Length: 239
Image (cartoon, rainbow, N blue to C red; front, top):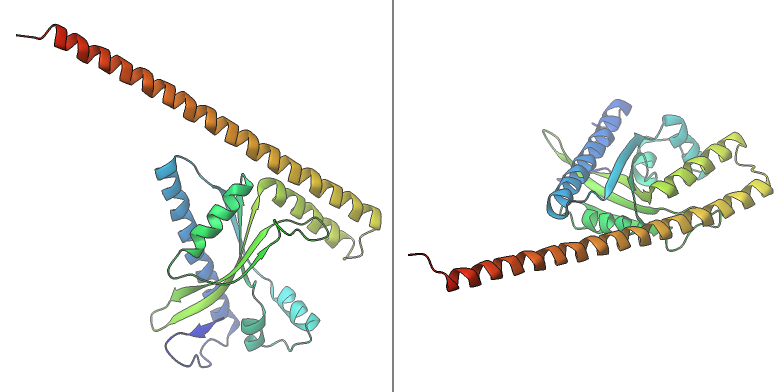
């Protein structure tokens, strides 16, 4: 929703270069926020929920193709109004539990407005595709105005990203007309990916529980040693 937050936007951003500058700036804003959140999480919990981040600006060809497919003219105003993923960020994490944790952290940012959410993890596509999508607006602070700019955020696990990347390459190779047996195989692979995510999450939770129990035992032993030392000091006080 590219718009002037302090009044009419005018025609001063009708050039392609200016428009792309604003979308690139929005990507930088969101990237910085994510890096800070990840660093804070590591500082507080000694754990990084984000493995890595990818970002991209949609190509002019893709934008025009999408507008034509929707029966719209290829204009700047239609781009701004109807294309939600001109600026896109993909967040890759290790476990499915991280996905919702990251989504919550993004939604709690005071200057980010969540416009729409699509949870393809709870409700996967028929193809087997899984990911968590958010359409948000982030303010881009320019010298003379503030511009609220749409960014699409996708959050998925490493396994989900591997599957989605392969599916994309297959659809590109066959120009969307993928043979049925390959579609069936992709669905089966998606089930395997989902099972892998579940098993890896369970394994990680078991490891964390073992670590907590180990820390508790160590702490109990440490307290016992301190108690014994205190009792000895009471029996044999120093002069």
